[in-house]
Amino acid sequence: MSDTHHPLNIETVHHIANLVQLGLTDEEAAAFLPQLNAILEYFALLQEVDTESVPPAFLLPGARNVLREDNPEPGMSREAFLSNIPASEGEYVSVPRVLEEA
Amino acid sequence: MDLYSLTITQAHELLRQRKISSLELTQALLERIREVDGQIGAYLTVTEAVALEQARQADERLRRGERVTPLTGIPFGVKDSIVTEGIRTTCGSRILEHYVPPYQATAVRRLLDAGAVLLGKHNLDEFSMGSSTENSAFFPTRNPWDLKRVPGGSSGGSAAAVAAGECFFALGGDTGGSIRLPAAFCNVVGLKPTYGRVSRYGLIALASSFDTIGPLTRTVEDAALVLQVIAGQDAHDATSLAQPVPDYAAQLQRPVKGLRLGLPREYFVPGMEAGVEAALQEAIRQFERLGMEIREVSLPHTPYALAVYYLILFAEASANLARFDGVRFGSAAQQAQTIPELYLETRGKGFGAEVKRRIMLGAYTLSAGYYDAYYLKAQRVRTLLRQDFERAFEVCDVLLTPVSPGVAFRLGEKTADPLAMYLSDVYLVATNPAGVPALALPCGFSEGLPVGMQLIARHGEEALLFQVGHAYQQVTEWHKMRPALGR
Image (cartoon, rainbow over all chains, first blue to last red):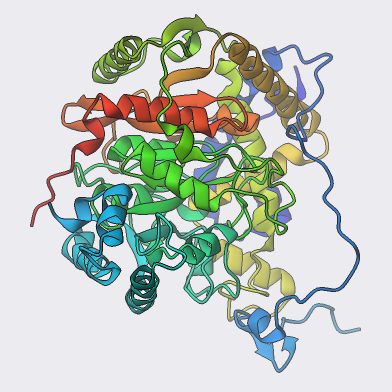
C-alpha cells in the first residue's frame, strides 16, 4: 500500500496544527479529521498518472531571475512600517518572552 | 437610463462631452450603494470622502482636457485582497480586521493615475479561499439576481457590485476561478489574465504561482479598457511579463471569421444542468454564425486538474499565510505570555475554518515522507496540463467551455462539505497552473439565473479573447440584462 493511503488520525491533526502554529480546539480537530481525510483520499487519484519522465512545473514559461544593481533605493519609512504593529514601544516591536529564564 | 447602469464606454463619452461630471457619476453610485448594498453586502469599506475628492480632481482634468484617459472620472471598487494605501484592507479575515496598508498595489496605483475614482473595497472569501463568498469572516455577499443565492467566489463582492450598478468596474483576483465563477453567476464579464500580465504587487498572496489580478466589467470592451491600464511589467513584481502590452482596443473590432474555436470534449460531459448546457450549445451556434470554425479537441489530463490545483494551492497558501503571526500586523492575542502562545492564539482565533484546513493540508503534503507522493507529483502532472493546452492550441485559436456545471447555488447549500464546494471550480482550475488567460462572459439564463461561458487562449493572447468576446456581444444581448433589485 502506498504512502498516500495513510489517513490522518486525531493525533496527527493536532501535530500538524502545532507545526503550523494553529491553535485548534478539540471540537475543531474532531470536525476537521474526516474532512481532511476525504480531501487527501481525493488527491490519491494523481497516482494513476504516469509521470516517469515528466519534470515538475516549478517555473512558468519565461520565468527568469530579475536582478538590478545593488544600489540603495528609498524604501518604506519606519513610521509607515510600524503603523500596523499591534504592540510596539518607540522604534521597537514588542513580543512576549522568547527565551525561558535560565 | 440610470447613471449606474452605464458601461465605462458610455460614461466616458458623456464625461468627455461634459454632459455629466465625474462628481455626478460618483454621487449617483454612492447613492446606489446606499440604496442596495444593505441587501447585497458587496462592500466591506466605502470610501466616500476619498471618492468625492478624486472625482473633483478628475473633473479638473476633464475640464482642462489634460491627461484624459478612458477611465478618467470612472468610479470603481477593489477586492479587499488588494492593498489600498491608507484604506483598510481586511482580506475578508478577522486577522486583518484593522490592517491599514502603508503601500499601494501597482494595479490600483495605475488606475488612480489614469484618473479613476475609488469607491471602496469589496467583500470576498477569507484570504480568497472559497467559491461563494460565504467564507468571509464578516458576512456573505448575496447574488443581485436572487438574494437567497451566492454570487460565487472568491471575488463575489466585486461581481455583485458590478452587476448591481454599485461600481462601473472592479479589480478582482483569480487563483482558480475566483474572477470567472462570480462573473458567470452575476452576469458580468470577468478576465483572468495571463500569469504575470498584471503585477501582483499589493495582492495579498494565496498561491504565488497561480494568483492573478483582473477586471470585472459589464462588457468585454470595458474589460479591454481596464486591462490596458493595469497591465505591464513592474519592477516590484519579478514575475511580471516583460512582453509589451498590445493596444487591446485597436484589435477589438477585428472580424472572427475563420478563427478556430476548440471544444474540449472533457469539459462537455454529463453532469451539467440542462439549462447551462442549452445556453452553451446556443453560444456555439452563435459562433458558427459569426463564421468561426468549430472543432472538437481534447485536454486529456482534465480529470486530474482539480487535484493538481488544490494540492499545489494548499502548499503555496500554507507558506504564504505563515506571516500572519500577530507580531508585524494582525490582531495580537492579548493574553499570550510566550511567543508560541502568541502564534497559536492569534492564528487560532483570527483564521476561519476553511483557512485552517488549507494551511494544515498544505503543510502535510509538503512534509518529509509525503512531499514526493503529493506535492512533487502534482507539479509533474501540472506540466502535463500545460502540455495539453499547448497541443490543443496547435489546432485551434480559442477554446470554449462552460464556467460552471450549474447556476448560482443557494446560500448554505455547499458549506457542509468542503470537497463539494471545490467541485464548483472543476472547469476553471486548469488555467492557473498553466498560466493561460481566460475570459468569462454571459451567454444566457437558466430559470432566471445567469449562465456564463469561458473562452481560453494561449499565453499572452488576451487580445484574441477580447476580439472573440466582443464579436459575440455585438450580436447578443445577455450582457445588457440588469437584475431587478427591489427599491
